[in-house]
Amino acid sequence: MANVAFLGLGVMGYPMAGHLAKGGHDVTVYNRTASKAADWVKEYGGKSAATPADAAKGQDIVFACVGADDDVRAICVGEDGAFGAMTADALFVDHTTASAEVAREMDAAARDKGLYFVDAPVSGGQAGAENGVLTVMCGGDEVAFDRAKPAMDCYGRAVTLMGPAGAGQLTKMVNQICIAGLVQALSEGLNFGMKAGLDTDKVIDVISKGAAQSWQMENRGRTMTRGEFEFGFAVDWMRKDLNICLAEANRNGARLPVTALVDQFYATVQARGGNRYDTSSLIHLLMND
Ligand SMILES: NC(=O)c1ccc[n+]([C@@H]2O[C@H](COP(=O)([O-])OP(=O)(O)OC[C@H]3O[C@@H](n4cnc5c(N)ncnc54)[C@H](OP(=O)(O)O)[C@@H]3O)[C@@H](O)[C@H]2O)c1
Image (tube, rainbow, N blue to C red; front, side, top):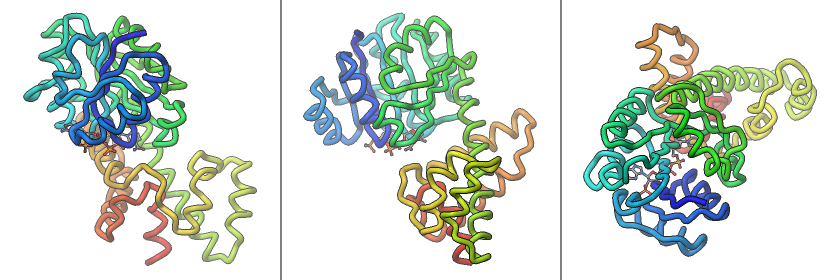
């Protein structure tokens, strides 16, 4: 069992930190909005700290799950950032979905201080975090990964080292690119079915047993046809992720024509006030136009 800190108790971080506590680790939490840290301590025990540095001091591993690139920079190397307080050889594991660039930058900053950095974005959403069944895609040093994996197993069911620093973020980009095109195709198919006067529940039942089957079809198909879009992973987050993918593709030369288009469809969902709708809301544009 390790002494650990968890920085960022949002939709994902709160239950992930909870699984670490339930797994027997000694957990200190930090959250920018302190009331959430107080709630967490009330629920799980452990301690809370006022800054990332205070939380990180003396820990074996510091975990984080915040918003985007600049938030990662702030909690690692900003004022009262964790790196300044960590002892040599300690690990920092970042579960934020961010760019590969910031992962490499934090990896270099960590090395300068004799620390290890692992980029470890997750997939599986709020339900995956609450049920402790996330997919965790890691980039970094093998020694660091091996040391962090037993703790990550508290909330992950597929925790895998993908390569050097940034490889976890790059793998998450592949994940988001695959989802974007798929959700648009599912939206078009289901909207077509409704316009054709079919019973779409029956359509989903039958075609989800064939080659068109997908997690999105089985878990979101029925709610999409009912115009229900309150399932966690918000359009605002998806646009952040797709923009990271598009920027990386600009660098590596991959072409992402459908992803770029779907990003613009999500921009339209935002413009119509759907920022907090979940990603299956693409069908909303087809149903209402
Ligand atoms: N939600 C999902 O289904 C899901 C799935 C996979 C991956 N992700 C990724 O996981 C990350 C977190 O998502 P989430 O849904 O948990 O977000 P969230 O509920 O908005 O929580 C974000 C957390 O980060 C903290 N934070 C943000 N910027 C900060 C800063 N500059 N300094 C200190 N703390 C900061 C927030 O503190 P406050 O409480 O003070 O605002 C909050 O605790 C994102 O990168 C997201 O893309 C989310």
